[in-house]
Length: 378
Image (tube, rainbow, N blue to C red; front, side):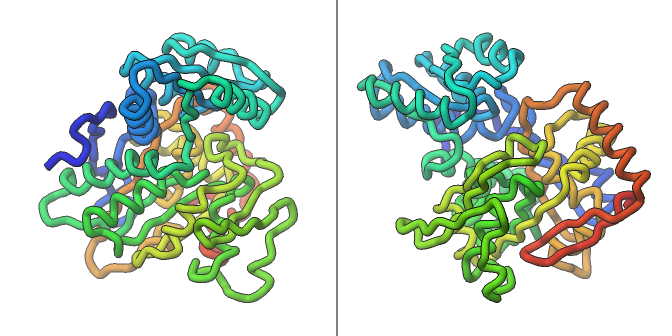
């Protein structure tokens, strides 16, 4: 039985990558969320939430979101398909190309404030004053996670018959995608399948949150429970977990730029039997992965997506995060997509990576509290 009979998103292809499979000695599959109409996996959870809002409030519902990124584009796309009004709030720093893109999709765009939080406050004011307005959450909501869970249902029937993955790898920011993957794995009987969640240094609120909680697989000494400089810890009573809040985001992977993750997903990650390997990489490694992926698969992906692919192109890192098997493991990389990538960006990445390779030193990668030196030229 189809678990999402009224879905708006596409069932995206799951392809076996000859390039990555050969490099790693495994069966590597790519779930191509780049092919969703709004260019990312956000199409799933955001449209699922929009449909729920339509059922709950009727055709006069007004969808409101504060986002200049992939969540905003997904909300506008879903609203257009459902013939609903959608208003997107952006700060003045938003690029003109983003504003134009959203307006082409039919959004009413409101520019308010100097930073994202200013735009969010104005969006909340609209929701409070308009009885038919509903705020669309970018990542922190069970309905959104439920929509993202559809990924796993598709992967289950797209893999060869009787095949279970030995690991599923994804990127993580606010952790909405990871929440959906955890829920989806539980629904299809894959709760014991290891998950690998990758983010970048300077945008690693999920990694820092896991480090603050017991049962995370991180070292349990008192020092590891102390947030690093620029990070504060806040106890979430609803989910009984401690969540990290980053005062400043320094990564170029802006789509991973949540200052704190969904507490509910942190809780799910701590409780699942297969665990979650939490990995942090340098921006430059994500840039290198984006370049290699473009060369191999003729597809551009933004840094928030190429972070997932870092273990695909670094055998040392892959062997660290994926459980060893005597035969070739089967792994799935969630190519989550995103529209924040241009040819000019790729040229800049090429120059940056070339400079890093000339430096010759290893890159520092962290995995559940352990440091791993990974060769830049590997």
